[in-house]
Length: 69
Image (tube, rainbow, N blue to C red; front, top):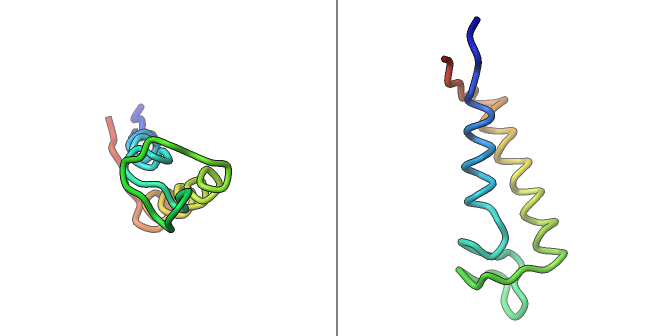
């Protein structure tokens, strides 16, 4: 029996990289985008969640990333 770890690996890496305020925050408090400010807001959480969903869907469904064990 084979297990597909592709979607789980993509989700973990994207969760780390797209956490609001870690690498960038969109929208920021004073600008449209800020890098590495480690702050967050409700609207930036919503924007990052939509970005996460769109990129995850493209990578897993459209491109079809698979890691089989």
